[in-house]
Image (cartoon, rainbow, N blue to C red; front, side, top):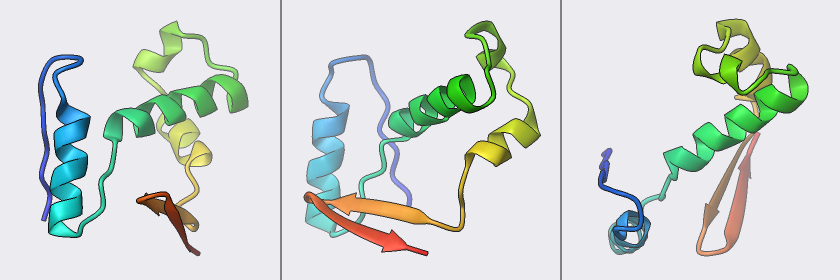
Length: 82
C-alpha cells in the first residue's frame, strides 16, 4: 500500500501522514527528506554545485545511495536491514 499526501507548505501534511501511518501500523516515509539527503550527498561526495542538482548524473546518484543497508525509524525506534 502506498499513500501519498500533497499540499502547500505548513499545511499539516507530515502530521496527518504520521498519524495515518501509526493508525495503519505502516512506515511513514518523508520523501522530501530523502531528496534533501541525496542533494546533500551529491554536494559533499560529488562536489556538485547547486545549479547542477537540477539534473544529476545517474551514476552519481547511484554512487550516493547504499541499497545494501536500509535504516527505518518508527516511533523513535530504529531497525537496520542489511
